[in-house]
Amino acid sequence: MTPGVDARSLTRVPQAASRDNRQRDVFTAALFAIAIATMGLGAFRPRANAALDAENRTILAWPAPAFTRAYASNFERAFADRFAGRDALLRIHNRTLVRAFGVSPAQNVLIGRDGWLYFLGEEGTSFDRFYRGAPGMTDAQVGLILAELKRRERFLASHRIAYVVTIAPDKETIYPEHLPRWAVQSAQRTPLDRLTEAIRADGTLRYVDLRAPLRAAKAHERVYYATDSHWNFLGAAVAYREIMRAVSEALPTKNVSIAPVVMPPYTPGVDVYRGDLARMTGDIGHFGEPDYAPLGKILATPQSRCGKRIDAGNSVAYEWYGCNRPGLPQAVVYRDSMAIPLIPMLSENFSRVAYVSSHLIDAAFVLRERPDVVIEEMVERAMLSPVATPMPEPEPDR
Image (cartoon, rainbow, N blue to C red; front, side, top):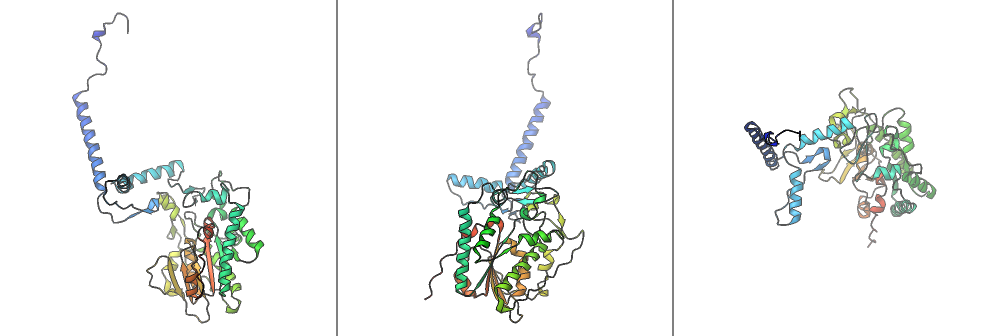
């Protein structure tokens, strides 16, 4: 206190709030309460779309009423998926992270250089395991994969069915140059390197290694999408030719002729693609690329091809196609999403082909189909799936 100053003459600290300040505070509190109530009530409005595109999932269902702790937790998560303004707030959040900081809001999407995006795996660990080698794959795991593939081959061979297996490389295997500079590949051989070497050393499997053909093709054309986790139609066409060469070698008595690939026309400025990874960032408008071979144009003209879908189309796990050209073999194709653009090409070469969205080979299903060849395609990050889903022992003939 300043000497000589009477403390009783000082103003009170803090000063009393004026009436104007009190009105402002009441107005602000009321506005906040109205906003919160509106957002909360908005959670119960009917929704036309149950998908959360930016998160690549569907809205959680409202739980059945119950006086339990689990009900409260499930209700809270379902409410959080629905409150009014959620989408707008997420868009602001996602755009800020992507455009201001170059960071992906999705934990399993990596923003690379030059507008490229990379998928880290369904659980966000595949990129580290299969590309960076942390954690690595043991020799025992590689041996188990080989053993399961050989077991499948022996079973099929016992029924005079050829077996062709291929692994679709992850995008970083073919296009590492667009990764962030810190994302350095392990100095050790990758799991795919080691499995390929083991398969070749064993010599019993008809295995299609797609890496060299895809790397050669990328010198002339883009074979993977920059904004998607999959190859494009151009890359799928490279894989198709290699797979069908192996099928032709596996079926020498069938005189397999590989149907030519018809490329869809590209319209600059019109055929623009924004892939699944762009959608998962929540800022799809920020990412786009030329779609040099639009798959949509192929799928929109099924009448132009011999191979047409012949089932009712009620199942998402099974699809049947047929081509009525004489002398064609039959096939079963076990696949994942990488094979979607392969379907219109492969179907031109078989009188009947069943596509199964699974890595679990069902011996009974194969024997009912009686194919000449079984083709198994799996993406690189799923190369452990034969071990995770081994073929059940077939029931003995009665």
